[in-house]
Image (cartoon, rainbow, N blue to C red; front, side, top):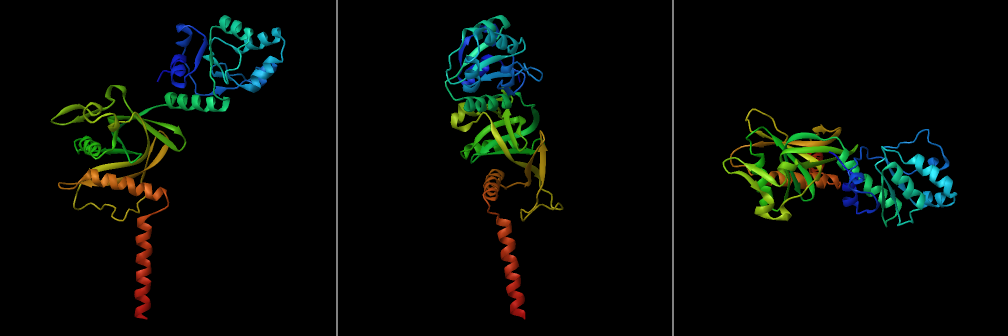
Length: 311
């Protein structure tokens, strides 16, 4: 995904102090953000000019203690053609030397009223999400009780129809058919729809339907963390399925492992209700309650009581 300075300005609500449309069209190629400290002293051996340069109170105070000449020399060295933009936090005053250096080097000056740490986190979250490498997987991503559930299965098994039933039950569609997933960090997986398929669902025999138009804005969501995967497969009498829920199967997507459960599908089985229950059960496990362990403990206790009675 391409991210420009203008997109960052609109998303994070930054003020453009200096910069025309050409400068705002510059691409941001990395989510890393630099807060120049050593660079202020003239040390540029490990400087990363391709990063956004963020100046907070500490950097600004140090700059203000310099002479005008030294301030300009540091800034003209810091601002490179590959630098996307410089961002100044806390609505700090922009020195004239910064205007001059930015104009000569051709980069935008942006400003925000929020604190430096808050601004850094907000920009990092946005850039991490946009610039993370995407992997496309086939399936339906639903938001069920606030939990992202990826529904997969063989072609024609009824994934989209199950998604539609879940929408009717008050849950939200994130993506149908193609889900673009990416790692937010080492343990967090996010999913979003392909732009061309946003809010759309394909139902065999009916065609493409627009969930937002038919069911309203509350029936869709633009992205969601993926916390559980469900695989639908045709029921076979000779196949053994997990009945106690003590299986620990996982799948790995974009380097992140998430739990997966297999749900057999056959005529008369309400799959959407089963998936809904699976999501609630997974949430209960995350909160420390495991029904399987409770059953096993009760069974063990019952066996112990029977053995004691026999003795």
